[in-house]
Length: 340
Ligand SMILES: Cc1ncc(C[n+]2csc(CCOP(=O)(O)OP(=O)(O)O)c2C)c(N)n1
Ligand SMILES: [Mg+2]
Image (cartoon, rainbow, N blue to C red; front, side, top):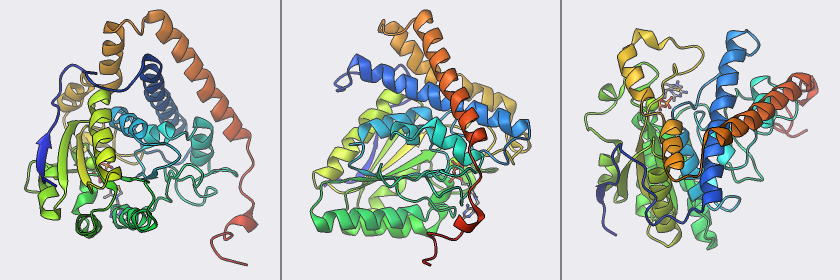
């Protein structure tokens, strides 16, 4: 297989040429992005009201996440997500109701029974592998899952995600080295939002692109505009198809940005200018997809008003249900982590 780095798409108008997405699916993807955005905004509000302890945001990164989720065979392929992947999780059928159980740490929370911090998206039924807090550890774990699929002769692909800062960890190198040697059915998606909390990318690596490292693992590297949902879908579909058909691992780098602070514990005014944040807000992935759908005649003001009302109702209901839900029972704290 040819290795090297391919730059597929730069910031610009969205383009659907050759994509297998019908109108219904396009509108569903838009809904998923708006649903994640409104859920996320509600979490920020609840935090500022002192009602929840912590939030880490997906805002600004919805396009690559929804594009990637829809490129997967959902329910068949495996996903090893990281904390910023709320929109990705929704794309894999995770719900706002489950998200709010997490931020309120209530019984029935599906990822870990509310034992972990929020945003550790996991779901056995949906093939979402258990998330760990140390960044980067998911890469060798996902490589192991991909190896197991290969040894069993299954046609399942594993998609693992992380931030560009997490690629400074040894786990990233070990996992992708293994994936390259064994031509694993793995897609490693790096959501490059330029910052690892306060540390800019230039202090994490001396190369301009994360994907520049792909050739050293003997795998293909691809760079995509991660704020363009259609380009993201296209690149992820190709990488997943390559993995499924025996072509091995791809390192996909999605260029994106988080306009919010790193988490509810961060003050981003200490390390970046407001002008920079405003510039990226003009490349907002939802606004860009909306412009495309309007130009295609698939969306208008009335449809947006209806969709926003529907999303708001779901978010309101999910929040209310989580507040009303019981706390986990104290005796459940250690089980099933330790066997009785
Ligand atoms: C091994 C390890 N070191 C440090 C941390 C603390 N930490 C949590 S998130 C984060 C920044 C990660 O940045 P990046 O990978 O770029 O992802 P982003 O948050 O920007 O999406 C750090 C340093 C951690 N969780 N694990
Ligand atoms: Mg980052």
